[in-house]
Image 1: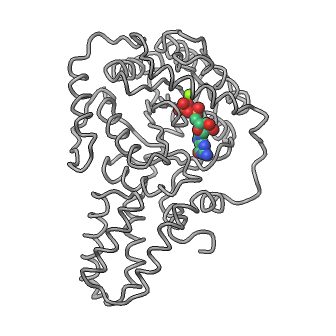
Image 2: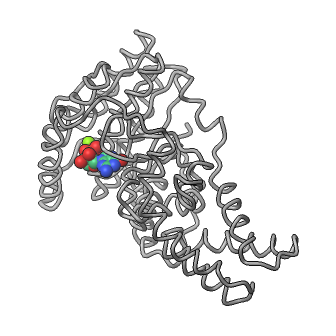
Image 3: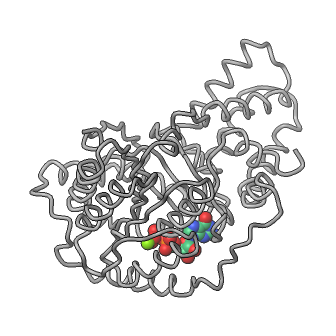
Length: 375
Ligand SMILES: Nc1nc2c(ncn2[C@@H]2O[C@H](COP(=O)(O)OP(=O)(O)O)[C@@H](O)[C@H]2O)c(=O)[nH]1
Ligand SMILES: [Mg+2]
């Protein structure tokens, strides 16, 4: 089955996570009988969980205004990406002031792109394409390179309609990612969007490791006005998926959104658990599309890229959700992830409110990143 196929990812030498990836591979290969329940949490994990819970406790229903602001979709994206744009645009405008297209120009451009978290590999790809086009179109001015550069990134980031066909199918969406990435919040936002589009939505609370994770999700479910199943601390996550998928099938639910626990400390279990969840979902809701979306915190920059690689090794991801694009200068990481993993970025989170999630659109993203609201 598709989520069980392991992709052979090329690991770039400049990334320190290569060793970690080997480790996951090794663990994956020696995985025993799927056993999703934790085999004892380390003190560090417990501490991390405690900090997270405290953080989440402050994220109460009252704080989340439900009324969508009048500000348009693009304005909110551009507003959220201000820091990323400021960092990039300032450097670029100086670069494009001069005229000569020489080696210095390409070197400086390379530095600016890498500094913007676009990643070494994707920067090289972008530069190669740019050089090719400069030659082909006999371009002599730096200013003209700007448009070529933007166009090339837009092309690279383009998603296809089929990437989102699951939204119109019957789908089970497994939302995966490390603690604190924004899984639960994003599920609330997705539920709200799908519900508003007239879909029948059900949420499964399969992050049963952390105390109060169920309560947090339940608060989001009620804000979104959808039903939730599960939420008992310590329950077997797969049994939650079993019940939820079963209910989804019997009630003809369109979208079943599943919250999961993600702890990189325990990859063997994580892999086994994700596999088991996918298998159960498919079995209990035959015909439903299984979508595996990885939630990454954009503020962690290169670390998010390493996490994406690691998760992509243990399960076949069908998409990425980048959260916290607001308030970070590291938005360029979206480009690095898409280019290096070949997994499309499907949604981006631009704030903590229920409407602060946007379906990824390459054109708007590139405009927000390079030009902002005035464009
Ligand atoms: N600024 C901002 N904060 C976000 C976004 N998405 C999630 N968060 C915050 O990130 C924190 C962790 O989110 P949570 O959903 O609990 O993460 P989980 O552990 O992966 O389920 C919460 O305080 C959220 O409000 C976003 O797009 N922007
Ligand atoms: Mg959570």
